Length: 548
Image 1 (cartoon, rainbow, N blue to C red):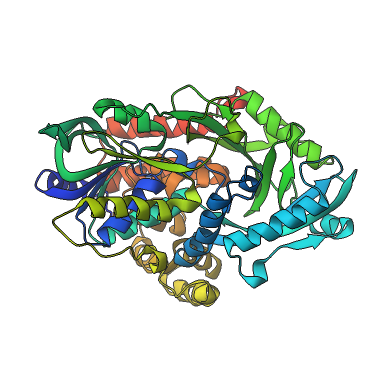
Image 2: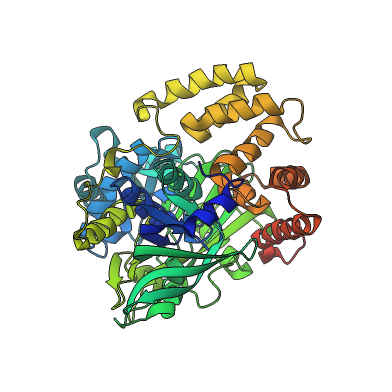
């Protein structure tokens, strides 16, 4: 169990053993490595200096996609590998991933034309091993406009129609970590590695500091992997940088608009005036649009959307959807993320490869750099393969994650998901929830919804002045997902700060009070966490220059 209440005892455990593997970094890459390793028989510890998924892994375009645009850069191997991974990720976590038909319109003078789109999507289907009912279709101008009436008509020559997979990146990361914890990995957030420990010039452990309490912990491990994303070079500097390679950060920004202001019917992958490509995706009554791609040299911990970023996205929307004239005030929230790409001299941000590489220092520290959300499972398999080949003590099992459901995904795959959700929607009414509330919870938490129902039953008469589903979600996030602060809950356990910001404003005080009682915050800590939540709310609309 990944319980915030048990976190102090877990930290004590770190001091007592030598692990086969220590992973530094609790984003999707580190989470995937933890799961792959622990299911092969390795003893595993994972530490993350912020919350799980707080970096890049909660700030992406939230697509498990095959990288169609990489065909233009002739990265055929990448398209083939990550394309095939989409289906695996989907079937293993159907409650956090779903197919999304994507419209790729082509206009006269645009990036794609009818022939290049048709050939590109056909090659994409082949390389990615796309199943028959999800293979590309080519649409006429009229058919394209029927799919999305808001499309620019001038110069429209038709469209390609193909499937991507939409996800919640932070939820996906959390479900991977929860599964690793279920299998025996010790995973702890807010634990920062301060320095390495060496024996005969080989790295054998780390000194860490609990960012919530200041408590020190020493962790010893036979192998250590640096999977810290944007902080890869910072961690390497604590050891050594010998290969001359380094990261180059680029920033990506997304905006969220209510569909009453942008009534998008259909997900669209479209040209921008400067020749880039961008996504506009409907999601639960909202539409989100992104991403920008600019070099970034500031602190990767708290990137924000600037007025210039948002203006760029709004102009791109108007360019492709001319009837939509959005204002800054109509943008409900934003998020910004930093992509840790491997530096390539002379290339623009959108041209730098998203490939991954493994680097090993003389001390034995392994670093995994680059990569994409979609390919996390394959990257993890590659890292653990390398580690197990080095071992002359044990014979480890091959990777089993290809067919291993993530936490909450044990309903037998996509073919059983709808019937599962329907059954649980009815069942939830016995616990004080409505049919619609139960259905939403079942679709979001998958087979873990039974724990939510149990909390709903317990909290019926003491819900901290919260709607029962929210109270149950807070209790579950604390006990099963190591949510330690209100920001953890509203940003990475629910995504509400991005896609349901009105609910955050409506219930933030009650959630803070419930977490104070459940986790034993002091008044000082409660105030600190409330201020942090308000800071996050302000950051999401900082481009307006207003207070929340």
